[in-house]
Length: 424
Image (cartoon, rainbow, N blue to C red; front, side, top):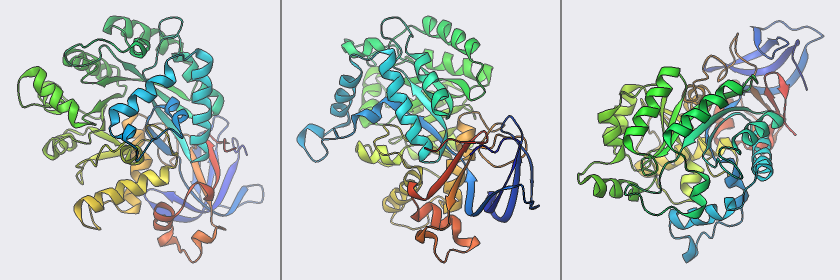
């Protein structure tokens, strides 16, 4: 279904944080919303018994990880730590090529679309195959061909650990100097003209990038007004290694807060073991935190110490299971279990949906492009069929509760990216 140049009429739509009934949305030929009203005409495209919400924004993905499915080893001694899982991941990319990374990403991005994800922040650090940085364009092309909107978070990776241990052979595919990285980044940015492609930056982690270059890269991003992301304190080992290396009781988040003026362009990914008081500082500074509850459970990472004012978004990370509604639910459920309460950080179904949409767009610096159904933004949206028995007896004021806490991918009927239904 293509509604460019047309008007779509739906029974219910999530507009400005609330359910509106009998909504008509007009879309121009470029896929942008030009009018929202309640006028109904015979030539409208009708989704008569559907709920329409903004497309989900996935702020943290490693698309190629999806192809580790079936190799979890959960419950066995071989799966006892995150670090052993990482070795399996290294095996996947040991012989990666441009065609392989393209196919890995294409299949994952298509699956994301079918799960209602219209935008992905791809945290891309597997850069090199036969030549330096020759894999980057393959990831972008996979996104273009799948129909998803992408922010390629081009990721700097300089070393194997705080004390520069010997590099694992596979890590050679990740590593570059800061200077080579920036040179390639500028070339990559100049080449991108597709309307669904944007380029951001990331420092892989404090263990993989020295603090001075984390700061340099963030300052670059801040100057260019593009997103900056970093894996932060996903595992206790990162904090302990950092403390051992600097000889002080400071973890990576302590150092970043002391050395950098964090703001809306900064996103900490996971922050699973970041102290609660540092998370409060993130919220005060307007920084974002991307949490990935299904992956953090799958890898046995832990549960982050969030607070009500924190700008939270969600990611699918390892993509073992791609269902954004499950990410929302487990963000809520894990916090409830951690705190023995059913009211934690204001994580209502409505707030969870906002985290999955407009807060995700904020973390990817796309708030002028997507994240909600608003005139001037692209029509990125997901429709859910209310014919499903799951929605039986749901009224307008209970639909979001039913959607977020009960529904799944099978209730998704259409996934629009810039006005074109990309669901397969």
